[in-house]
Image (cartoon, rainbow, N blue to C red):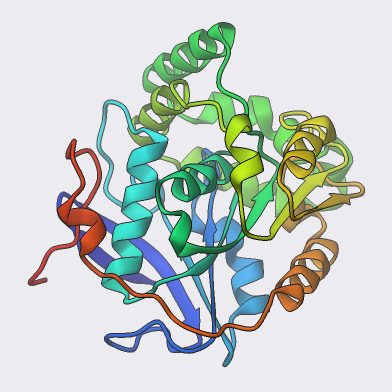
Length: 303
């Protein structure tokens, strides 16, 4: 585990393979960044870090602000803020273009990152997520849930949604996976989870942006996902010009954990299909010097 202080927050993250941990450069190989969902942490991607990090590929998996070991700030955290945090982290690590993947809320952060920084995205991985804006009913429900988490803590929510996060038959058949998912949810800071829910309730509609995505995209979904069903995945795969849809049979909302081998096979094939890397683009400070609004972290010049 590594930590990085970025303006008003400290992020914890895993950074393995390639030239991870070396000062001043992202290396000459692939860089894969994996963004966790709500209410999880970077450990949800541990199997994929182990599978894909190696001499030719660097894998970075951060704890988003408000989750895991990263700084918790109460209030509201928008998808834009999360995206700027990731950009700040990559700038400080000297990383330019990346394959950017995320699951659920993490997938929506990936879409927001692409909206803000399309030149920094080499390819997208959108797992068990959806592109539509929140409905009025959904906004009310997310804000009500935020209030509930602050009032009750994470335990009751975690117990209530476990069999939606993990397919019910997998809760029985894969007790270690179910325990991991439950523990991540129970361990999430209520203030951070509530802030993310309030911000996610205000997310924009990304459906109209899909046709403008000019990089390859892998859209993955569990066949039994109740939160983001296959129909939502098809909207994205149909809308993105160069998209591949993969349905992971027998998985719910967490196919990377419930069906690790199948998920890794799909992701591995996608990564191998990408064109060779011909150049690196690193711009460490330009994005942040022009950023207005002050919501997200900016890199500290003298850490």
